[in-house]
Image 1 (tube, one colour):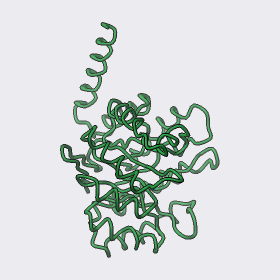
Image 2 (tube, one colour):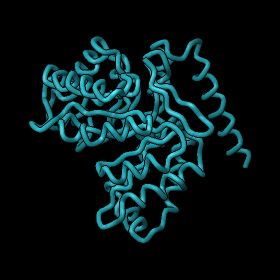
Image 3 (tube, helix red, strand yellow):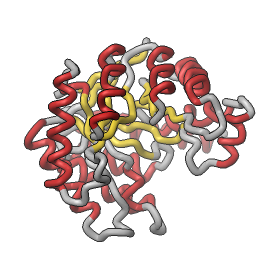
Image 4 (cartoon, one colour):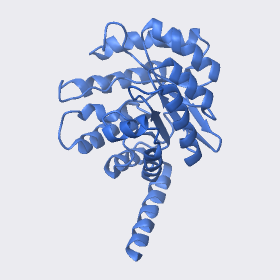
Length: 290
């Protein structure tokens, strides 16, 4: 099952037989006080740096979130998407919990976007899914609902089933449904990652759907987070995870994903691995030459 995202100049395919899709997480004001202040002042210049760093790091898709309190989020998201598309051909993941912002983003975006996200509440799905259908976008859905976040894989699968049925009811092809199996911090629950890995495995086995998650969630509150994230992603890929919203600026994490691509047969003959290595060596030699 392939989830296809497009921009005017690029197509990215997410699938179990494809190299892992890295969705760059950086264009997000959460936890970035200075960035929030700049956005409130109408200054989007930091986005240019974020785009350049994530593209250089190896992102395949860029997540764009403009959730800043005391701003006109729909208009801000519209401007941010226009700016991002002027800077790169990478497809965009439109990230907002505000329906008006999602609508503005989808109306502005040139291509087929991924929307992040919808939860399993009936009211929420009935609000968001018609918009996804209208614009022909793909959607990330999380298996939590009015009762909160399920702890076990079995409980999450019940909500996944409801999401699948509802998406089909709205005439959205399952190729355009990407499930977030919910990554919680292992610092708060020793079984959190095991539950996530089990959920990933069950979703792949039962539905064959593509999946994504916020990779850094698993290490929240712990030291040396990059090492934990780099260890987690190959394990999740082996279970069936096909993409992640993650830090594409951190070489250790990106390299662990690309190595897993090769080891899991998603990079036949190591073509991408070798090309990446050669590019890194060329960049290093150029830097030393200067």
